[in-house]
Image (tube, rainbow, N blue to C red; front, top):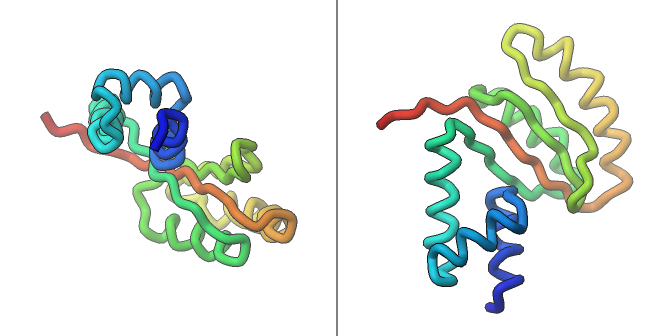
Length: 128
């Protein structure tokens, strides 16, 4: 696997910039797994935890509902390739009022694209 493929893998899994992915690989002498672990630890230390999930268009709405039911979510970002289509703020207590318009818009957009990336910004507790 060449350097660009490794960088793409890191970006796909962690949603970081090319620069951050490249720097992590440099720091880990090109070891992909070590670079991913390094970046995950840095995100956890900073109190930021973002999960990245790939979904098909027909799964989009159900997956968002499932993520919200799990709880512990601040924001969901819906992307098609690198383009952000929508950011959904998830606030306890107003989920049904806030979520309905977003899901309506997403249902219409789901027909336009085949694949989506969901970035789930979760609340984290830092334990040292």
